[in-house]
Structures are given as structure tokens and as C-alpha cells.
Length: 223
Image 1 (cartoon, rainbow, N blue to C red):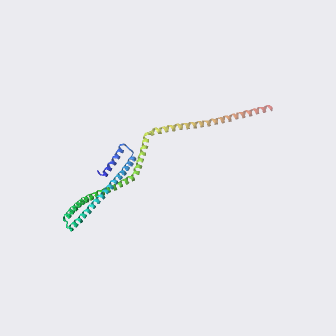
Image 2 (image 1 turned 135 degrees about the vertical axis):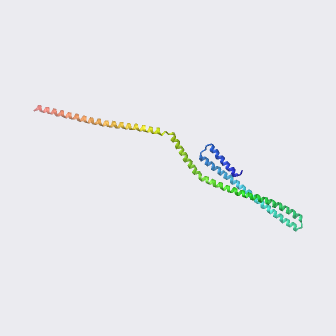
């Protein structure tokens, strides 16, 4: 299993664990991005290691090519010196170096293909992390709105609006009755005050009539 397959498995496992434990969405989002960043770090280390191995393969390949050329030069020198035995041994060693260089070249080519694939996957992972970072705030905002709506709905479900309004109506009726009673008492008080005024006025008229009658009586007696 390659590094990216392992990373995907780890991320999915962590997310599934959070979902199983019914963690809130915001925590899942943040944890997922943290896992992706950790995966990004591990992937970069893996790609860097692969590049380093490729450089070593390249050096070994170049070294064996140089060695093959070196043995070819020695074979030519041996022939010039009339030493076919040395020339023959030099050519055998040249072939061994060429064979090893050929094998290394095959490995190097395959390794370079793998490195390019890893680089492509790493760039894709970088893009996914960037996309996740951009979406995080939007998803969290949506989650908070949903949570607020859920809270309001729960509060509404716990409140018996019919009973609440019925209680308000009863309170309003009692207040209205009290206002009516106070208004009636004020009206009655005003009526009683007028009766007292009229009664006092009547009493004053009786006194005046009696005074006039008394004066008339006294005047008649003197005459």
C-alpha cells in the first residue's frame, strides 16, 4: 500500500471514528483538515525520499557508465601494449559495468515515472487541502445556522403557545375588569359629589326662604 493509500485510509478512519462518537460537524471538519495537513507532511517526506533515491540511482548509473568507459580505455591501452590478456579482462569488466549501468538505467526510468506520479498526487493533495480550507468557514457557518435553527425549534417544541396565549388572555380580561371597576367607582364618586352639591344648594334655599319669612313676620309686627 502506497503512502497516499495509507493517508486516505487514516483520514477516513479518523472521520468515521468521529462520526461514530457523534462529534459535532465543526470538530469533524477541523480534525479532517488537521489529518490532511499531517498527510501532506508525510507525503512530502515520501516524495522527497523518492527523489533522493532517484538521485542516488542517477549517480550509480553515471558511475557505472564512466567505469565502462574507463575499462574500454584500459582495453585499448592493453592492445597497444600487446597485452591481449589484459585487454580481454578489461573488456569483460567493461561489459559487467555496462550490464550494471543498463539495469540501473531501467530502475532509474521506472523510478522517475513513480516520482512524477507521486508529485502529481501530492499536487492533487495540496489542491484538496486548499479547497478544504476555503470551504471550512462556509461549512462551519452553515453548521452554526443549522444549530441555531435546531435550538429555536427545540425551544418552540417545549413551549405550549396555546396555553401561553390563553394565560395572556386571562390576564388581559382581569386587567380590563379592574379598569372597568375603577372607572365605575370614579363615575359613582362623581355622581355622589353632584348629589351633595345639589343637597347643599337646596339647604341654602330653605335657609333663605325661612330668613325671608322671618323678616316679613317681624316687619308686620312692628307695623
